[in-house]
Length: 455
Image 1 (tube, rainbow, N blue to C red):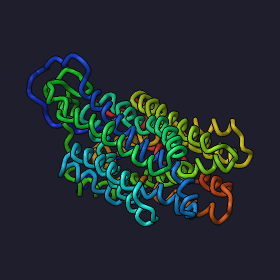
Image 2: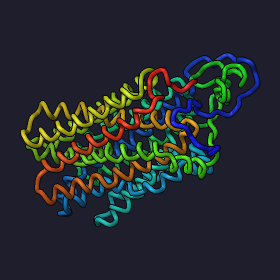
Image 3: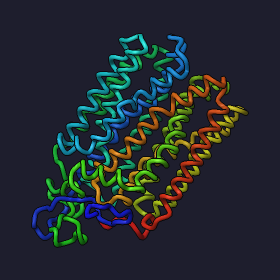
Image 4: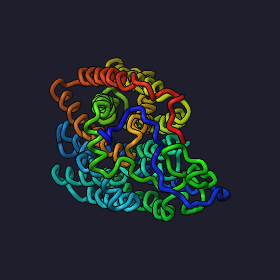
């Protein structure tokens, strides 16, 4: 088929042709792409630190106040992901409306919904608002790999890792702060505090940095390099660095057709389902497990925050490693850490070990931070002929749908058994199955260090 996407294609991220000048000097001062990354870091700091990590701490007070089951309150956490089907249209929405409009709209929607949470008192109303928050989050998150690709090539994974580390460091800072607000003033006040942060720390930096759309608008190339003509330094089959990426394999419909018809994509999707089943189950229930093991609620919030801190380091370190080393071995390390994290939390539940608690925070935290960066690198390598705006949208749908179901499923197992031992054992088994599926993703050539995308 003429549009078939071969897994080991080395076509780089697509870029529109820049101006024909042979070589323009790079602009002095801080590269604007770095400013964009900082703005996205701050936005994710609040969008995820407040909307996801901190909301996990709402489960115990909501259970106590409304006498809902653990499965129901866990469902409020994972309702954040209910808008998963909309992710499939992420690439098309970027083409139609532009990435910046989606970013801004997502932040505003999330701020409005989290402020309204403080005014409701029924499960149905709260669930709908959490689902709407998820829609805003999807509009925000689906654009990030694409926006980073407009500014970086050699340092793409590191740039994306910095952006996503903002989500994790947001959890590190905001989870303990939110826990303290809940203890002192109640969960409704905590909702209003998160909304205020979204409108200041998240929205303002995005508005301040997103006017230039690509490096060529400022007379420089990707990564801040000197701008050259298409014939000057572009690799065969690629356009010149410095301008905005364009779709490679046609529009959204054709890109989705390529992915759906590719066995490799479904293998990656299956690995994603098993991987993020463990991820979502552990993340949703870790606070309850820690408290159930006899540790205080405040210590639970500290552990949650430290997990996010390790996740921030994971985003940065995995991004750095992916730009320099084999994707295959980075993936092996992440899968081993996920399994070790699940086993560590099982030890916390069974023997109430502080050492296992610290081990869990470190291992699972690094996995949280590095996993999305790793999977995007796999997608860009295996489907290099498709714009990341489309491949990431399709893969992200699999991730979010899994996270939507993982928390309530783990909560249901807890409700049936009355303890977390069986739940954590199943989650550890899911991590093992993720490793098995990923083994077949790693087997074909093209993920070694010497198979990096030409840039």
